Amino acid sequence: MIASILGGIAAIPWMRAALRYGAITLTIVLFLLSIRRAGERTGRLAERLETTEKANEIQRRMLEAAARRPRDRDELVDRLRDGGF
Image (cartoon, rainbow, N blue to C red; front, top):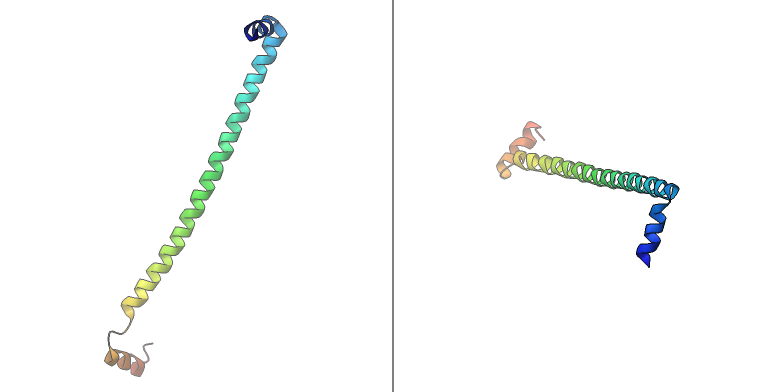
């Protein structure tokens, strides 16, 4: 029964054209939706990269500050006397 209905629809020339245009329209809509989804994914990845870069910069600053700290009390006193802080 379903085959005869589909066969009857495909036999009418203007119905075949409508099906063809419908298929083309559906393909374009699905393509645009996939582009949109890919764009959103790219935006999230760019945001994650930016956040990671900020965190790495902060961590680098902390490591540099730790490398410059006085190692003992004597070095701290010397820095305070020299005004190196």
